[in-house]
Amino acid sequence: MSEELTTISAGSPPRVPPLMQGVSRRRRAKDLVAVNIGNAIEWFDWNVYAIFAPFFAVQFFNRADPLSAMLSTLAIFGVGFLMRPIGGWVFGMIADKRGRRFSLTLAILLAAAGSMIIALAPTFTQVGVLASAVLLLARLIQGLSHGGETGSAFTYLAEISPDSKRGLWASTPWVGVAIGTMTATGLGFAFTTLLTPEQMSDFGWRIPFFVGAALGIYGLVIRFRMAESDVYEQQDESPHSLTLKDTWRILVEHRTAVKYIAVLSTSGVAIFYTWFIFAPSYATTVHGVPAGQALLAGLLGQAVFLALIPVMGALSDRIGRRKMVFAYTLGFAALAFPLELILGSSAVRLFLAMALASTLLAVCCAPLGAIFTELVPTRVRATVVGITYGGFCAIFGGSAPYLNTWLSSLGLHYLFVATLVGLSLLTAVICWRMPETRGTAIR
Image 1 (cartoon, one colour):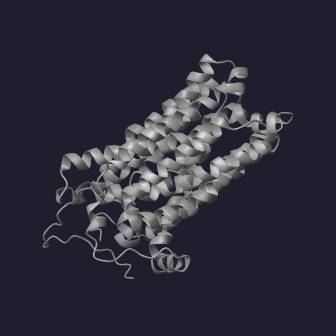
Image 2 (tube, one colour; image 1 turned 180 degrees about the vertical axis):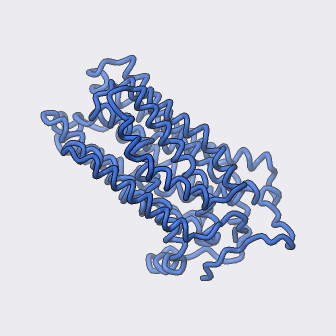
Image 3 (cartoon, rainbow, N blue to C red; image 1 turned 90 degrees about the vertical axis):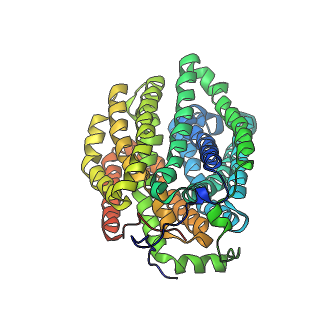
């Protein structure tokens, strides 16, 4: 394959935006909302686990050793990530073979099924180690679903966007990420305020999983009504086959794009799961911040990310994608240890640290959907993005909460922070070498 980027020259006629091709602007705007509502539900299902882990850990493992139970629960959180590259492969091929809409609809169905299994799961006291096996099964199902969601959502929204607003439109899945995560965090705050710790441990933790399953049914309905991407339907080449050999050939053929997507994802997902998802639980278990206060602080910190994502997505359409990711890498490398010094036993300090981290994450995350889409052709786009992004999420995102908690228990938390700094600097080096993709005509 040619790795060259096709740009829109000043003298050539502009490509007719997909919004103008057969489907109205109003319909495409509705489809954008539908994708992101479904994406929010997916992320609610995924992150309810991390938010409520301190309350249900002893329900699935031996309560005689709470730290071991928590580490085991986080280990299953990490194992769920191992399914994400598989989900990226399976759902990416489905999206490239059967269409983006079909893939997105199937993904949310599996996410809802995983939530229902956890909501109804028996406890360690009732069935012994079988309880942890059921929990593992549910997370594997959700990992498979979640791995398919990201690549298909980025791909679909970038494909239906106007060229001049691709950064903005392709950033909106992160709005869904924020809304889903904030809803999970908000429920955590509400329940820890209304219920006693004993009630939370006994039954309160199950309620959000029932909510997630119910929301999944709603997401299934709205996604089923979406229109297919015009870029996908009007492509000249036939979709690729479903074999492993063909998939490997595709990844090798597009290895330059794979390299960029992999490295751009690496530090972002590790920092995202450390500061955006797991920080409230970490502040509670390590710094002793009361659970309700930590979740409220986390909710407010996540709101900063939500507000900034569309701003940063639109900014990437004006100044370019590469500059923004490069600014994020240097910014986090400089602030990683100061952020740890801000974090402490106060909920206010947790909010300040999360707000700063969320600002940096918004600068990083907003341009990624557009970059990924602009690097890979339509015929294999969902597969390449899904496998690569899902794989590096599995390695660096899934392991972050466990590694953070384990090193902190040994008094070596600074090693974890240094690792994040190293990943940021690696991303900076690769980003410096990457061509600017703004203005690329997707093909």
